[in-house]
Image (cartoon, rainbow, N blue to C red; front, side):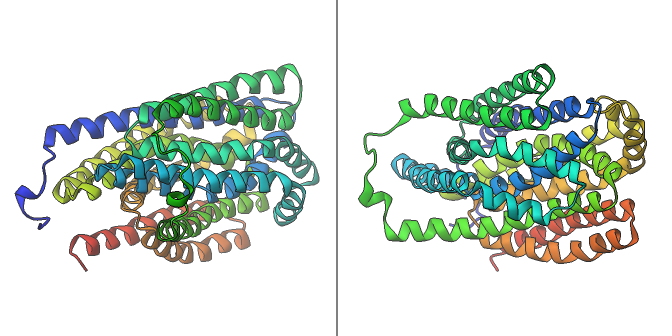
Length: 443
Protein backbone atom coordinates (compact mmCIF):
# COMPACT_ATOMS: atom_id res chain seq x y z
CA UNK A 1 0.00 0.00 0.00
CA UNK A 2 1.45 3.36 -0.95
CA UNK A 3 2.68 5.70 1.75
CA UNK A 4 0.96 8.54 -0.15
CA UNK A 5 -2.46 6.90 -0.01
CA UNK A 6 -4.57 8.68 2.63
CA UNK A 7 -6.17 5.34 3.43
CA UNK A 8 -2.80 3.81 4.19
CA UNK A 9 -2.95 4.85 7.84
CA UNK A 10 -5.39 3.97 10.55
CA UNK A 11 -3.83 6.18 13.24
CA UNK A 12 -5.72 9.46 13.53
CA UNK A 13 -4.10 12.82 14.28
CA UNK A 14 -5.63 13.03 17.74
CA UNK A 15 -4.77 9.46 18.73
CA UNK A 16 -1.20 9.79 17.52
CA UNK A 17 -0.83 13.21 19.12
CA UNK A 18 -1.94 11.83 22.49
CA UNK A 19 0.50 8.93 22.27
CA UNK A 20 3.33 11.24 21.24
CA UNK A 21 2.55 13.73 24.03
CA UNK A 22 2.24 11.02 26.68
CA UNK A 23 5.49 9.32 25.71
CA UNK A 24 7.33 12.64 25.48
CA UNK A 25 6.04 13.77 28.88
CA UNK A 26 7.09 10.65 30.78
CA UNK A 27 10.36 10.34 28.86
CA UNK A 28 11.29 13.90 29.74
CA UNK A 29 10.54 13.33 33.42
CA UNK A 30 12.57 10.14 33.36
CA UNK A 31 15.46 11.67 31.47
CA UNK A 32 15.74 14.80 33.58
CA UNK A 33 16.41 12.80 36.74
CA UNK A 34 19.68 11.59 35.15
CA UNK A 35 21.45 14.92 34.48
CA UNK A 36 19.98 16.48 37.60
CA UNK A 37 21.74 13.80 39.58
CA UNK A 38 24.89 14.59 37.61
CA UNK A 39 24.51 18.30 38.29
CA UNK A 40 24.13 17.71 42.02
CA UNK A 41 27.13 15.39 41.85
CA UNK A 42 29.13 18.17 40.16
CA UNK A 43 27.83 20.82 42.55
CA UNK A 44 28.85 18.82 45.61
CA UNK A 45 32.30 18.07 44.19
CA UNK A 46 32.64 21.63 42.84
CA UNK A 47 32.19 23.08 46.32
CA UNK A 48 34.93 20.98 47.89
CA UNK A 49 38.14 22.80 48.75
CA UNK A 50 40.11 21.19 45.93
CA UNK A 51 38.94 21.24 42.30
CA UNK A 52 40.89 18.03 41.54
CA UNK A 53 37.94 15.90 42.69
CA UNK A 54 35.56 17.43 40.14
CA UNK A 55 38.19 17.18 37.39
CA UNK A 56 39.03 13.60 38.44
CA UNK A 57 35.42 12.47 38.24
CA UNK A 58 35.21 14.12 34.81
CA UNK A 59 38.15 12.01 33.63
CA UNK A 60 36.83 8.85 35.29
CA UNK A 61 33.44 9.40 33.72
CA UNK A 62 35.02 9.21 30.27
CA UNK A 63 35.79 5.55 30.92
CA UNK A 64 32.18 4.77 31.79
CA UNK A 65 30.92 6.87 28.92
CA UNK A 66 32.92 4.64 26.64
CA UNK A 67 31.87 1.42 28.36
CA UNK A 68 28.19 2.05 29.06
CA UNK A 69 27.40 4.30 26.11
CA UNK A 70 29.16 1.84 23.81
CA UNK A 71 26.80 -0.80 25.14
CA UNK A 72 23.93 1.58 24.48
CA UNK A 73 22.96 -0.70 21.61
CA UNK A 74 21.43 -2.95 24.29
CA UNK A 75 18.78 -0.29 24.89
CA UNK A 76 18.51 1.13 21.38
CA UNK A 77 18.29 -2.15 19.49
CA UNK A 78 15.89 -3.54 22.09
CA UNK A 79 13.60 -0.52 21.76
CA UNK A 80 13.40 -0.65 17.98
CA UNK A 81 12.97 -4.42 17.68
CA UNK A 82 10.45 -4.53 20.54
CA UNK A 83 8.43 -1.64 19.07
CA UNK A 84 8.28 -3.27 15.66
CA UNK A 85 7.15 -6.57 17.22
CA UNK A 86 4.45 -4.72 19.16
CA UNK A 87 3.41 -2.92 15.98
CA UNK A 88 2.85 -6.33 14.40
CA UNK A 89 0.94 -7.47 17.50
CA UNK A 90 3.50 -10.16 18.44
CA UNK A 91 4.09 -9.73 22.19
CA UNK A 92 5.88 -13.07 22.54
CA UNK A 93 8.47 -12.01 19.96
CA UNK A 94 8.91 -8.73 21.85
CA UNK A 95 9.74 -10.63 25.03
CA UNK A 96 12.24 -12.83 23.20
CA UNK A 97 13.99 -9.66 22.06
CA UNK A 98 14.45 -8.70 25.72
CA UNK A 99 15.68 -12.11 26.84
CA UNK A 100 18.31 -12.27 24.09
CA UNK A 101 19.53 -8.82 25.11
CA UNK A 102 19.65 -9.81 28.81
CA UNK A 103 21.86 -12.80 28.04
CA UNK A 104 24.37 -10.61 26.26
CA UNK A 105 24.22 -7.88 28.92
CA UNK A 106 24.80 -10.28 31.82
CA UNK A 107 27.81 -11.85 30.11
CA UNK A 108 29.35 -8.48 29.23
CA UNK A 109 28.74 -7.06 32.71
CA UNK A 110 30.52 -9.90 34.47
CA UNK A 111 33.46 -9.64 32.04
CA UNK A 112 33.81 -5.91 32.74
CA UNK A 113 34.11 -6.59 36.46
CA UNK A 114 36.64 -9.39 35.93
CA UNK A 115 38.72 -7.21 33.60
CA UNK A 116 38.43 -4.03 35.67
CA UNK A 117 42.17 -3.65 36.39
CA UNK A 118 43.53 -4.00 32.83
CA UNK A 119 40.67 -1.79 31.63
CA UNK A 120 41.71 0.90 34.12
CA UNK A 121 45.37 0.63 33.07
CA UNK A 122 44.42 1.04 29.42
CA UNK A 123 41.92 3.86 29.93
CA UNK A 124 43.94 6.05 32.26
CA UNK A 125 47.07 5.43 30.24
CA UNK A 126 45.35 7.14 27.31
CA UNK A 127 43.75 10.02 29.23
CA UNK A 128 45.48 13.29 30.06
CA UNK A 129 45.45 15.00 33.43
CA UNK A 130 47.60 15.97 36.37
CA UNK A 131 48.69 13.18 38.75
CA UNK A 132 46.25 14.44 41.39
CA UNK A 133 43.37 14.51 38.89
CA UNK A 134 44.14 11.00 37.61
CA UNK A 135 44.36 9.68 41.18
CA UNK A 136 40.89 11.03 41.97
CA UNK A 137 39.60 9.57 38.70
CA UNK A 138 40.94 6.12 39.58
CA UNK A 139 39.22 6.23 42.97
CA UNK A 140 35.93 7.02 41.25
CA UNK A 141 36.44 4.27 38.68
CA UNK A 142 37.39 1.66 41.29
CA UNK A 143 34.08 2.08 43.09
CA UNK A 144 31.71 2.55 40.16
CA UNK A 145 32.91 -0.42 38.07
CA UNK A 146 31.14 -2.86 40.41
CA UNK A 147 27.83 -1.61 39.10
CA UNK A 148 28.60 -2.67 35.51
CA UNK A 149 26.41 -5.83 35.43
CA UNK A 150 23.37 -3.95 36.75
CA UNK A 151 23.98 -0.99 34.44
CA UNK A 152 23.98 -3.17 31.31
CA UNK A 153 20.90 -5.14 32.39
CA UNK A 154 19.10 -1.87 33.04
CA UNK A 155 19.75 -0.79 29.45
CA UNK A 156 17.87 -3.85 28.21
CA UNK A 157 14.89 -3.28 30.49
CA UNK A 158 14.69 0.41 29.62
CA UNK A 159 14.73 -0.44 25.91
CA UNK A 160 12.01 -3.04 26.34
CA UNK A 161 9.66 -0.82 28.32
CA UNK A 162 10.19 2.06 25.88
CA UNK A 163 9.52 -0.22 22.92
CA UNK A 164 6.22 -1.22 24.55
CA UNK A 165 5.34 2.48 24.99
CA UNK A 166 5.54 2.02 28.78
CA UNK A 167 7.58 5.15 29.41
CA UNK A 168 5.96 5.53 32.83
CA UNK A 169 7.93 2.50 34.03
CA UNK A 170 11.13 3.93 32.55
CA UNK A 171 10.40 7.01 34.68
CA UNK A 172 10.07 4.89 37.83
CA UNK A 173 13.36 3.13 37.05
CA UNK A 174 15.41 6.25 36.42
CA UNK A 175 13.82 8.26 39.21
CA UNK A 176 14.55 5.56 41.77
CA UNK A 177 18.16 5.23 40.60
CA UNK A 178 18.93 8.93 40.52
CA UNK A 179 17.19 9.85 43.76
CA UNK A 180 19.27 7.11 45.36
CA UNK A 181 22.38 8.53 43.72
CA UNK A 182 21.67 12.05 45.02
CA UNK A 183 21.05 10.85 48.57
CA UNK A 184 24.17 8.71 48.61
CA UNK A 185 26.25 11.52 47.07
CA UNK A 186 25.42 13.69 50.04
CA UNK A 187 26.10 10.86 52.49
CA UNK A 188 29.31 9.52 50.97
CA UNK A 189 30.92 12.78 49.76
CA UNK A 190 29.96 15.29 52.42
CA UNK A 191 29.20 13.21 55.49
CA UNK A 192 31.78 10.43 55.05
CA UNK A 193 34.34 12.59 53.22
CA UNK A 194 34.97 10.01 50.48
CA UNK A 195 35.14 12.69 47.72
CA UNK A 196 35.55 11.16 44.23
CA UNK A 197 35.39 7.60 45.53
CA UNK A 198 32.11 8.41 47.26
CA UNK A 199 30.62 9.61 43.98
CA UNK A 200 31.59 6.27 42.44
CA UNK A 201 30.01 4.19 45.22
CA UNK A 202 26.82 6.26 45.06
CA UNK A 203 26.45 5.67 41.32
CA UNK A 204 27.20 1.95 41.69
CA UNK A 205 24.53 1.44 44.36
CA UNK A 206 21.95 3.36 42.35
CA UNK A 207 22.34 0.93 39.42
CA UNK A 208 21.24 -2.01 41.58
CA UNK A 209 18.29 -0.04 42.90
CA UNK A 210 17.24 0.61 39.31
CA UNK A 211 17.55 -3.07 38.42
CA UNK A 212 15.35 -3.99 41.38
CA UNK A 213 12.62 -1.63 40.16
CA UNK A 214 12.88 -3.07 36.62
CA UNK A 215 12.41 -6.63 37.87
CA UNK A 216 9.47 -5.57 40.01
CA UNK A 217 7.60 -4.40 36.89
CA UNK A 218 8.86 -7.05 34.49
CA UNK A 219 8.09 -10.22 36.43
CA UNK A 220 4.28 -9.83 36.38
CA UNK A 221 4.46 -9.14 32.62
CA UNK A 222 6.23 -12.36 31.68
CA UNK A 223 4.56 -14.57 29.14
CA UNK A 224 4.16 -18.30 29.65
CA UNK A 225 6.91 -19.02 27.12
CA UNK A 226 9.80 -18.39 29.54
CA UNK A 227 13.32 -19.33 28.47
CA UNK A 228 12.51 -21.23 25.30
CA UNK A 229 16.13 -21.80 24.22
CA UNK A 230 15.27 -23.09 20.77
CA UNK A 231 13.43 -19.88 19.90
CA UNK A 232 15.81 -17.61 21.78
CA UNK A 233 18.82 -19.03 19.93
CA UNK A 234 17.17 -18.97 16.51
CA UNK A 235 20.06 -18.39 14.11
CA UNK A 236 18.33 -15.88 11.85
CA UNK A 237 16.99 -13.80 14.74
CA UNK A 238 20.36 -13.78 16.47
CA UNK A 239 22.12 -12.78 13.25
CA UNK A 240 19.68 -9.89 12.73
CA UNK A 241 20.12 -8.76 16.34
CA UNK A 242 23.92 -8.88 16.17
CA UNK A 243 24.04 -6.97 12.87
CA UNK A 244 21.89 -4.22 14.30
CA UNK A 245 23.82 -4.14 17.57
CA UNK A 246 27.14 -4.06 15.70
CA UNK A 247 26.13 -1.01 13.69
CA UNK A 248 24.66 0.81 16.70
CA UNK A 249 27.76 -0.08 18.74
CA UNK A 250 30.02 1.47 16.08
CA UNK A 251 27.83 4.57 15.89
CA UNK A 252 27.71 4.99 19.67
CA UNK A 253 31.43 4.35 20.13
CA UNK A 254 32.17 7.13 17.66
CA UNK A 255 29.72 9.46 19.41
CA UNK A 256 31.29 8.78 22.80
CA UNK A 257 34.72 9.24 21.23
CA UNK A 258 33.70 12.68 19.99
CA UNK A 259 32.64 13.74 23.49
CA UNK A 260 35.67 12.09 25.07
CA UNK A 261 37.92 13.95 22.62
CA UNK A 262 36.25 17.20 23.66
CA UNK A 263 36.87 16.43 27.35
CA UNK A 264 40.45 15.24 26.80
CA UNK A 265 41.18 18.29 24.62
CA UNK A 266 39.80 20.48 27.42
CA UNK A 267 42.23 18.81 29.83
CA UNK A 268 45.10 19.61 27.46
CA UNK A 269 44.05 23.27 27.59
CA UNK A 270 44.39 23.32 31.38
CA UNK A 271 42.65 22.16 34.54
CA UNK A 272 40.57 25.36 34.73
CA UNK A 273 39.35 24.98 31.14
CA UNK A 274 38.56 21.31 31.81
CA UNK A 275 36.54 22.21 34.91
CA UNK A 276 34.64 25.02 33.11
CA UNK A 277 33.87 22.86 30.08
CA UNK A 278 32.81 20.01 32.35
CA UNK A 279 30.21 22.24 33.98
CA UNK A 280 28.97 23.49 30.61
CA UNK A 281 28.75 19.91 29.36
CA UNK A 282 26.69 19.11 32.46
CA UNK A 283 24.27 21.87 31.47
CA UNK A 284 24.29 20.63 27.88
CA UNK A 285 23.51 17.16 29.20
CA UNK A 286 20.44 18.47 31.05
CA UNK A 287 19.14 19.97 27.82
CA UNK A 288 20.09 16.87 25.83
CA UNK A 289 18.12 14.64 28.16
CA UNK A 290 15.16 17.00 27.89
CA UNK A 291 15.29 16.84 24.09
CA UNK A 292 15.91 13.09 24.22
CA UNK A 293 12.48 12.78 25.79
CA UNK A 294 11.18 13.73 22.35
CA UNK A 295 13.69 11.47 20.59
CA UNK A 296 12.70 8.48 22.72
CA UNK A 297 9.05 9.06 21.85
CA UNK A 298 10.05 9.13 18.18
CA UNK A 299 12.03 5.93 18.68
CA UNK A 300 9.09 4.08 20.22
CA UNK A 301 6.44 5.34 17.81
CA UNK A 302 8.63 5.04 14.71
CA UNK A 303 9.12 1.34 15.43
CA UNK A 304 5.44 0.72 16.15
CA UNK A 305 4.21 2.73 13.15
CA UNK A 306 6.75 1.13 10.84
CA UNK A 307 5.80 -2.34 12.07
CA UNK A 308 2.12 -1.52 11.46
CA UNK A 309 2.80 0.06 8.04
CA UNK A 310 1.54 3.50 9.14
CA UNK A 311 3.81 5.57 6.87
CA UNK A 312 1.86 8.82 6.73
CA UNK A 313 1.47 8.83 10.52
CA UNK A 314 5.24 8.39 10.82
CA UNK A 315 5.93 11.48 8.70
CA UNK A 316 3.34 13.48 10.63
CA UNK A 317 4.89 12.51 13.94
CA UNK A 318 8.38 13.53 12.72
CA UNK A 319 7.18 17.06 11.91
CA UNK A 320 5.78 17.45 15.41
CA UNK A 321 8.92 16.05 17.00
CA UNK A 322 11.25 18.48 15.23
CA UNK A 323 9.21 21.50 16.24
CA UNK A 324 8.97 20.38 19.86
CA UNK A 325 12.68 19.47 20.08
CA UNK A 326 13.87 22.83 18.74
CA UNK A 327 11.40 24.57 21.05
CA UNK A 328 12.86 22.79 24.06
CA UNK A 329 16.40 23.68 22.96
CA UNK A 330 15.52 27.38 22.74
CA UNK A 331 13.58 27.25 26.01
CA UNK A 332 16.63 25.87 27.81
CA UNK A 333 19.31 27.95 26.09
CA UNK A 334 17.56 31.31 26.54
CA UNK A 335 17.72 31.68 30.34
CA UNK A 336 21.19 30.11 30.42
CA UNK A 337 22.55 32.73 28.02
CA UNK A 338 20.83 35.56 29.89
CA UNK A 339 22.16 34.58 33.34
CA UNK A 340 25.18 32.27 32.90
CA UNK A 341 26.94 33.56 36.01
CA UNK A 342 24.01 32.59 38.19
CA UNK A 343 23.70 29.13 36.59
CA UNK A 344 27.39 28.33 36.89
CA UNK A 345 27.49 29.78 40.40
CA UNK A 346 25.10 27.03 41.47
CA UNK A 347 27.65 24.44 40.39
CA UNK A 348 30.92 25.87 41.69
CA UNK A 349 32.25 28.59 43.98
CA UNK A 350 35.55 28.98 42.08
CA UNK A 351 35.46 32.42 40.42
CA UNK A 352 37.96 31.58 37.66
CA UNK A 353 35.88 28.56 36.61
CA UNK A 354 32.74 30.71 36.51
CA UNK A 355 34.51 33.39 34.45
CA UNK A 356 35.69 30.88 31.86
CA UNK A 357 32.30 29.17 31.77
CA UNK A 358 30.54 32.47 31.11
CA UNK A 359 32.97 33.20 28.25
CA UNK A 360 32.25 29.86 26.55
CA UNK A 361 28.51 29.64 27.32
CA UNK A 362 27.22 31.27 24.07
CA UNK A 363 28.38 28.18 22.18
CA UNK A 364 25.62 26.20 23.86
CA UNK A 365 23.00 27.88 21.63
CA UNK A 366 24.16 26.48 18.26
CA UNK A 367 25.14 23.18 19.84
CA UNK A 368 21.68 22.72 21.36
CA UNK A 369 19.50 23.97 18.49
CA UNK A 370 21.27 22.02 15.76
CA UNK A 371 21.78 19.05 18.07
CA UNK A 372 18.04 18.88 18.77
CA UNK A 373 17.37 17.94 15.16
CA UNK A 374 20.14 15.32 15.25
CA UNK A 375 18.57 13.73 18.33
CA UNK A 376 15.19 13.45 16.60
CA UNK A 377 16.75 11.84 13.54
CA UNK A 378 18.57 9.42 15.83
CA UNK A 379 15.23 8.41 17.31
CA UNK A 380 13.73 7.88 13.87
CA UNK A 381 16.47 5.59 12.56
CA UNK A 382 16.73 3.68 15.85
CA UNK A 383 13.00 3.00 15.72
CA UNK A 384 13.38 1.82 12.13
CA UNK A 385 16.34 -0.36 13.27
CA UNK A 386 18.41 1.30 10.51
CA UNK A 387 21.71 0.88 12.32
CA UNK A 388 23.81 1.02 9.18
CA UNK A 389 22.47 4.48 8.32
CA UNK A 390 23.31 5.76 11.79
CA UNK A 391 26.80 4.25 11.63
CA UNK A 392 27.65 5.74 8.24
CA UNK A 393 26.33 9.19 9.16
CA UNK A 394 28.40 9.19 12.36
CA UNK A 395 31.58 8.20 10.50
CA UNK A 396 31.18 11.17 8.16
CA UNK A 397 30.35 13.54 11.03
CA UNK A 398 33.45 12.48 12.98
CA UNK A 399 35.61 13.04 9.89
CA UNK A 400 34.27 16.61 9.70
CA UNK A 401 34.71 17.21 13.45
CA UNK A 402 38.26 15.94 14.01
CA UNK A 403 40.40 18.46 12.06
CA UNK A 404 39.14 21.65 13.78
CA UNK A 405 39.07 19.91 17.19
CA UNK A 406 42.71 18.84 16.87
CA UNK A 407 43.65 22.27 15.57
CA UNK A 408 41.99 23.80 18.66
CA UNK A 409 44.37 21.82 20.87
CA UNK A 410 47.34 22.82 18.72
CA UNK A 411 46.44 26.50 18.91
CA UNK A 412 45.27 26.28 22.55
CA UNK A 413 41.88 27.78 21.61
CA UNK A 414 38.88 26.81 23.78
CA UNK A 415 36.53 28.76 21.49
CA UNK A 416 37.69 26.82 18.44
CA UNK A 417 37.12 23.61 20.41
CA UNK A 418 33.51 24.61 21.04
CA UNK A 419 33.11 25.64 17.38
CA UNK A 420 34.26 22.18 16.31
CA UNK A 421 31.67 20.61 18.63
CA UNK A 422 28.92 22.76 17.08
CA UNK A 423 30.14 21.70 13.62
CA UNK A 424 29.92 18.07 14.71
CA UNK A 425 26.25 18.49 15.68
CA UNK A 426 25.50 20.21 12.36
CA UNK A 427 27.16 17.38 10.44
CA UNK A 428 25.04 14.81 12.26
CA UNK A 429 21.84 16.68 11.40
CA UNK A 430 22.72 17.16 7.75
CA UNK A 431 23.85 13.58 7.11
CA UNK A 432 20.83 12.01 8.80
CA UNK A 433 18.45 14.49 7.18
CA UNK A 434 19.81 13.55 3.77
CA UNK A 435 19.39 9.85 4.60
CA UNK A 436 15.78 10.46 5.70
CA UNK A 437 14.96 12.20 2.43
CA UNK A 438 16.39 9.27 0.49
CA UNK A 439 14.37 6.85 2.62
CA UNK A 440 11.13 8.77 2.15
CA UNK A 441 11.64 8.92 -1.60
CA UNK A 442 12.27 5.18 -1.73
CA UNK A 443 15.84 5.45 -2.98
